[in-house]
Structures are given as structure tokens and as C-alpha cells.
Image 1 (cartoon, rainbow, N blue to C red):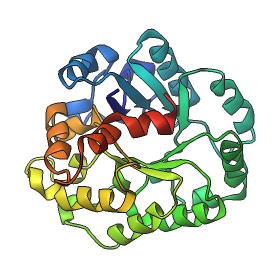
Image 2 (image 1 turned 90 degrees about the vertical axis):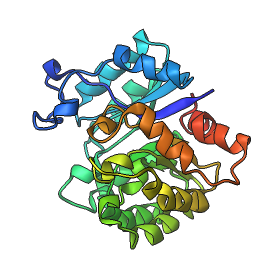
Image 3 (image 1 turned 90 degrees about the horizontal axis):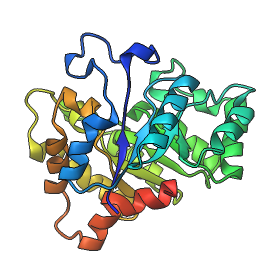
Length: 276
């Protein structure tokens, strides 16, 4: 089963999102399942994982309603305030929905880079571990040391780094991103989404081969059983079309990857991680 492990939907009229803003013209409109289906069919993608794009419980409910209506939405990664005393109650409520498959605190947007290490957050991390429930990690390279600290305390936490921790490809950033990614990958319970790279490059003048060293490094670190493909549609439209995102990844994979390896990247690993 081929899976796009990272894509979004939103409706501006619902006022659930403070982003995108009107200056992001390519994505400042509604994006619904009907807009995505043609791309999935073209690339023979059977399921998607829909990811929250706003820190509101109401948006998670909106995405779960969409998942009820569309079979191809295999799961929803939603949002709950992990520093809240109400977290256990809301987590239990959402877990009753069969397509609630993950949670994502939007760490990249928080003022405190060490927010996830707060005692109240760690208490709720323990609940995730108790239920063997995964977490998506949305961060920049500067956050990686704190995530490594978290994993040293909770080595069994099932976590996936979104967008490869967003290396600044436009500036040819390598260090310290590459070393930090390697440290993160040493924890066997974690994975990485090869997604979101094109929007970290120059939106107007990126070249397909400039992503190769990043993709090769990620596969070298995580191996072929802990990486997954994600389009990051429609955010990717800021820099590339869905077809181009697929081509960037496909054309930059290591030559030694087998067909079995590619099946894991394009679905098998996501199916296992999110238990679709």
C-alpha cells in the first residue's frame, strides 16, 4: 500500500488557522480532499496521513470529520495542548476515533525551545508511552538537542521528525544539522519523514540534485526501515507541484535501494508507525 505520510487540509472560512496568511498567495485558499485526489490517483497512492496545521482542538475535530467522509484518509495526526491538565481527558476522547493515529505539538512556533522538557509536558509524554501512541516532531535544527534529551529520558517514545528537522537548504546548511540528525537516529523507536525539503530551498530557483546529500544522509542514518515519504501538500505549492515533490525524492534515492526498500519508504513504514 502506497501512503503519503504528510499532507494537510484547511478551510479559511472556519477561522481555525492563523496561517497561511494572504501574502502566501499559492496556498491562501481552501484545500479539500477533492483537490488532492487527482494527485493520489496519478501516483497510485492509496492512503494519506492528514496532519494538523493549527494549534486548536477544533481543527483536529474538523480533520477527523473529513477522515470519516473519505476512505483514502488513513489517519489524522491532531493537536492537543500537551501542557494542559485537560490533556488526559481529551486524549482519551480522541483515541476513541479509529483514525486518530498521532499527535503533533507545534514546537517550531513556540518561544521556548525547551518547551517539551517541562514537567507537565513530560507527564503527558508518559501517557503517550503508556498507550504506545506516536508523536510527530515539528522542529528546526536548533531544537534537536532538546529532543535528544527527551529521548534519553523516554527512549521508548515512538516519534517521527517532520520535514527532516528543516535544514536550511537555501543556505546550504549542513552542520550542525547532519550531526544532530545522526544523534537523533540512534534511538531505535524514532523515524524521519522525507518531506518538506523543497520549501527549505530557494522557492524559485531550486535544483533537483541539491537535495541529494540530505536525502542520502537521512537514509544512511535511519536506514530504509525508518524513513517515510510525505508530500507536505499543499504547503509544497509555495515552491513545487506535487509531481515535482515526488520527482525530487525518487530521483535522489541511493542507487542501492531495492524495490523492497522503496515500498517501505512509500508506505510500509508509515503503515507500521501509524498502525493504519
